Image 1 (spheres, rainbow over the protein chains, first blue to last red):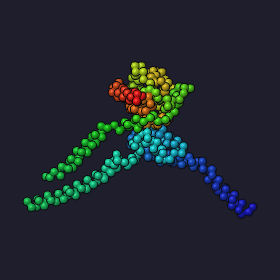
Image 2: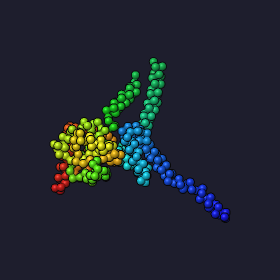
Image 3: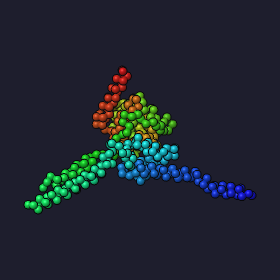
Image 4: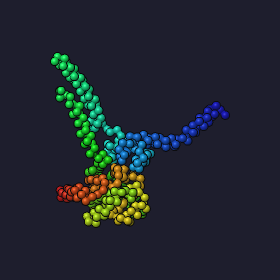
Length: 136
Length: 183
């Protein structure tokens, strides 16, 4: 047997498990992607859980539907869009940034900014008050 | 004391007001995404085996109430007599969606209480329910003759809801239809 034949046989033998795993790997990918997408979708009957974390029957059925869509070849965004079309932005754990949600996204910044302004102006005010007291 | 001393208090009162308003909202009642949109396409097996499947395409031609129910649903028991009455008195076309149920349980439920539905889809795994954005039972969709969803009511159907919301909508959309026909 030539060296080349040996190498070829070895290569095939080494790759056999990998080839056999191809089908299983698909299942694993589907499960993985289903889980990942489910993490980003809100359970519409329990409000503050993702459908991945919820045991509600509707969440279960939504996970099943996510899996079916992933298996059918939909992209992650396709699946999310499908749910969004039906349940609105609410179903997305992280709502899209758009004019209606600016307050939601940037509101906290407003609070911090307002707090800082208040802090510095009132601190200066207090010092002024003190100065006045000193003068009096 | 300067007016600025009252800023924190004002801020606090404003927050209380905002949260107070928040408490009166019902976030569990999601507005339907399908108002004034056509019924999303679906095909689902009939509750009665052997009968033709229920399809979105069949929800045309007249005003239809699409009612999501299940034998497990307590509120459905409460609204059921009124659905029977609506069917008998108004003769409105009613299509049921038996959601996450078993055929036997649903059959028994309807045998006991009467069947107001012209046809019933059997949605064991929420395929159509999720397709329609349903969050709970009962829910009742108003579909106009062109197959457009005009309203979705979450919770039991009552005479008030029917007279104050459904009837005016039916009147409104049958009116626009006749003007469109005339035009």
